[in-house]
Amino acid sequence: MKETILQKAGEIFLKFGFKSVTMDDIAQELAMSKKTIYKYFNNKEELVDESLSYLHKSMHTSILGICGQGFNAIQENFEIKKIFKDLFQNSDDSPMYQLQKYYPKTYQNLISTEFSMFKECISKNIEKGIQEGLYRKDVETELSTKFYFSLIMSVHDASLYTYNKNNINKLEYKVLEYHTRSIATLKGIKILEEQLDQNLMKK
Image 1 (cartoon, rainbow, N blue to C red):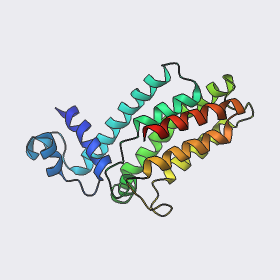
Image 2 (tube, one colour):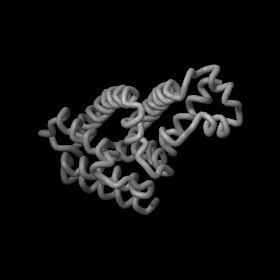
Image 3 (spheres, one colour):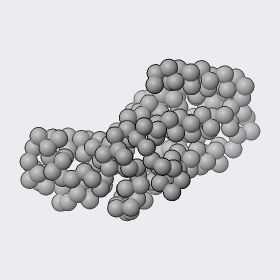
Image 4 (cartoon, rainbow, N blue to C red):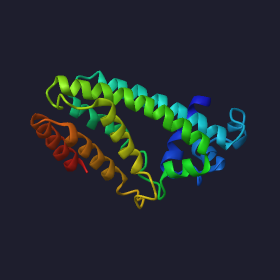
């Protein structure tokens, strides 16, 4: 029961925002009483914290699964991007901005954990891409990883962009393209453009 609550709550928070979603909303979505939810969580803040931790672990498992499927480095990044495609599609305000504003402690913990996972994943991806001849041999892996993470997070910064539920996915694809072009060889650029064409056709 607790795992069911965590999974659904995480999805709802990311889709509709951490401020606007209430415990009543979550109870209604799960077709259970609010009293049942309070058996497992003392308050909304605790539910936000634990649901994000659960969602993060679930995504990490999904990413590891993709990394084991034999895609080349550039295809791999596009497949991973698909995991996050629908997370922010229904919110009129950035869920990440809301999290930072109303649950700063949870936000800081999330960023720290997210960067750790992101760093491991992208570092391995860059090394793989270099071996495949898709990324340049002179790429500074750690620096490129930090640049990419900073760009991805900046997309959700309300002081930089006007958040729009219809363009957030497009912005993240632009960041992925920007990152890839900055480190790719000519061979890699060709594969990148093929991936961009394929994803454009699916939109």
